[in-house]
Each structure stands twice: as structure tokens, then as C-alpha cells.
Image (cartoon, rainbow over all chains, first blue to last red; front, side, top):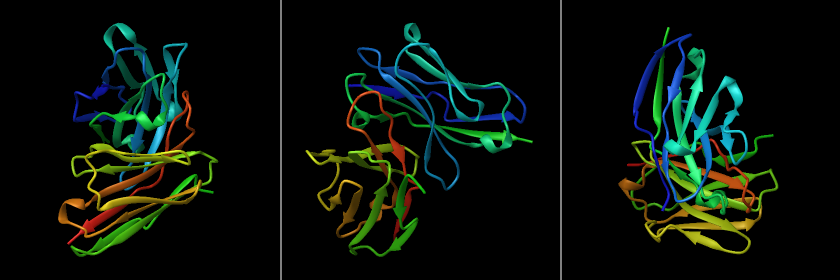
Length: 115
Length: 113
């Protein structure tokens, strides 16, 4: 069975600082990988996704993530954080042979941005 | 022109009541889902449904039932509500094929008192 680990429950960064949120997955083959963001009182918005090809993927709002097969990781990065980035971030995986109905989420990382 | 919309956004009700949450998607997707987000923000799939099959997470009590009048709607009915049902419920949709992502609604915060 697939699983996702987000080791950091809560991260605090200053506005303008760089950000990296960690995500590790457990799956027998290369999965599909996703990052979603949940702003306070809002739904889940897809930031970016990896299906195949270039291991560095670009997403919305200036986010990027890098798939590292050797480390089973898909860390999310942003060079300069804005106050509006404060939210809960979820990493998710699904089998590459399956559909979104087999999506498994990590436990989330809450991001606080200091002025 | 919201892609996946849920109503209501907030629902407060008493124990023992029966309630429904509605979900509609205008993306032309053929599969819809319900997720439950608990107080620790953990997201767990409850149901996935397309016109071919309903897949139920075995941990979901049978007091919960999805109802799909058509491909664009998947409503969630909950009977005999319990305090532990308090959570945020998310509807989502996608295509039933690989290489696709799920789109989520805004969530319904259910509070059982």
C-alpha cells in the first residue's frame, strides 16, 4: 500500500525567505505526485503535479517541486515566501497505473509566515 | 463558474438528525469523491463513484451514503448524526483514467452538537 509522510507538522518562515516543505512517499513503483494547498476556510487547490518526465515541476503561485526517485521524495520549494502563502500544504500520491480515486494524502504541513 | 461546488459551507445540527450535503461539478468529470478531514487535518477518502461502480472505504459507517442523481452530482447523506461525525467534508471530481488530478470543492464544515 502506498503512504505519504510529511515530517514537518508546522513550519514558520519570515516573509521573503525561501521555503522547502518535505514529502516522502512509500510505493513499489514511481507514483503520481501532487501538492495541494488549503488556505484558511478554503478548499484544496492543486499547486503542482508530477506524472513523468522532467523531475523538476513548476506550479502556480511561484512554487516548484523536485521528484527524487532515489530518496522517494517530492519536496516543495518557493524562493521567496509571501504572507498570502500561509496555509496548510498537503502532499499526495496515487499509483501510476491508477486514477485519482486512489489518491493518498500526507498529514499536512502548516506554514506560518512572519512579517 | 466554480468547478466543484458544495452546499452548505457550514452545517450545525443536533445528534440523531439526518442531513445531506450537496456537490456539483461542471468539469465534465466522470468520477466523484467524498473525503473527510478530521480535527487534525487528516484527509481520508470515504467514497469514490462513477457510473460504473461505487467504492466505499470499509471504515465508513453505513450511516453515510452517497447518492448520485447524475454524472455531475454526488450528494452525501448522513443518518443518525453522532458527535464524532463533526469534521470538514470535501467533495472532489476527476476523470477515471491515469494522468489526471482531482479537483476539490470548498468543503462543508459539519458540527454536531
